[in-house]
Amino acid sequence: MADPAPDDGAQVDPALAARLAADPLAGLLGIALEEVRPGYARAAMTVGPQLLNAVGTAHGGATMALLDVVHAAVSNSHGVVAVAQDVHTEFLAPGRPGERLVAEGSELYRSRRTAVYRIDARGDDGRLVATALARVFRTDRSWGTAG
Image (cartoon, rainbow, N blue to C red; front, top):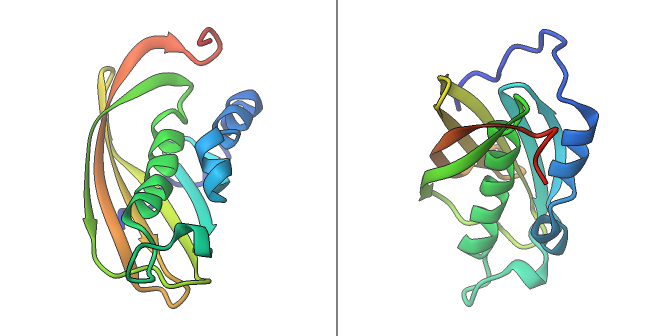
């Protein structure tokens, strides 16, 4: 994974953090946003029976949703509305039933208009389950005016 953004004490607006943490689909899938700061986010989910695929491992859609929740949080962490343009995901190992998957995302590049993020999901034993390289378009709208 890319190095996490330095924890220089910078904070994400608490109202924005609450909005990002209240993602309805994340709630349905049991995904919890655990940390968000400018340029970094972390979320986790436990692979319950409702998240299994036909062969009994974590469904790729559930794993991708975990990555996407982190992507949304890290890319919007600067308080500017960011819209996903591309997410390239590699599924590397299956998430196992009952396992807690943790995904972390870090900013690799940010300009006024675009940004790129690396998001990795790992299993309980530290193995890399999935990785994504994701790009966003950064709008002119601040989250304070988004509705």
